[in-house]
Image 1 (spheres, rainbow, N blue to C red):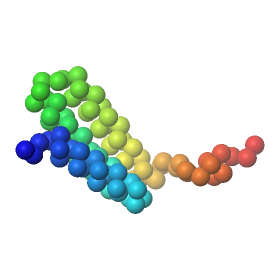
Image 2 (tube, one colour; image 1 turned 135 degrees about the horizontal axis):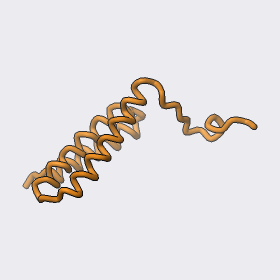
Image 3 (spheres, rainbow, N blue to C red; image 1 turned 60 degrees about the vertical axis):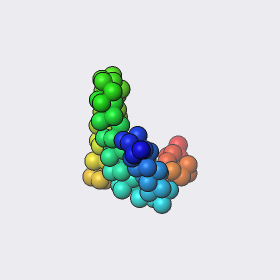
Image 4 (cartoon, helix red, strand yellow; image 1 turned 90 degrees about the vertical axis):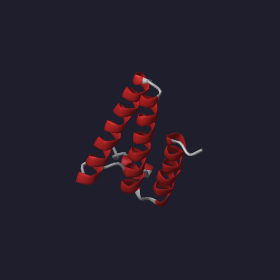
Length: 86
């Protein structure tokens, strides 16, 4: 039986693969669709608190996507580049 939990899990794996490949924008979009599956699933189970938490996480993820897209997020994963010499 195919469910929203399975679809969300598949999308989560696709998003993780995209992050592994370095395609952050694509990964975030896929993660948002996975979250959407889980929100619908929470609402079907009348889990309003879970739906609120998932939705708030989606909003933070979408804001991070917009910040990355606009170029305002500057974070390096290299330790030497992320700290200023002082």
